[in-house]
Image (cartoon, rainbow, N blue to C red; front, side, top):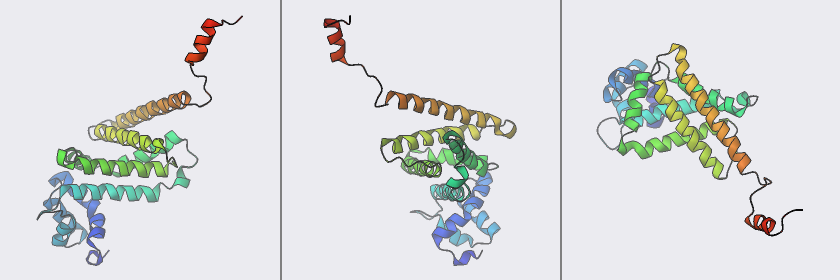
Length: 223
């Protein structure tokens, strides 16, 4: 790839994963950007410019969001809806989250540092937007077509599950990340049970309690 021919936006995405590799050792910093650029054969000065946001130094959130976007795009390409079509909905979601975990395996320290940066008050709004976008991509790949309030609740719940799973993942030292897999399965099972209960409760033809009917029966008891 000739990095000199790329736009800054294209360069940012092209280098994002390499920057994450360097962030394992140097944090989300100018040093990580420069090291990634040199390793990939790009101009370090132009690379810093690609990640700059309202300052003279490369911006950590620009690096992190570019990294997340590359994973979103890779997942979009490799986990096409037709590939997931034969799975039940819980397996689709589990597979999509697991894909993302596999994508950052070996970069746990970079992820740990990224989560800390995204949790800073000044970055909260952008972190929320980024998490929502990722949840939306996953639900879309899972075949969700909801346009009512379920569209929003599903994405909010999945974003919460994914964030909690990442927190477990970065600290997981079990064989093959078994603890993370078990945690993810428990969270998804819990949500599926809740959704079934909610669907039953909201079922339109469900027999509901009627005050008028109750009072009528008190006045005119059945014989």
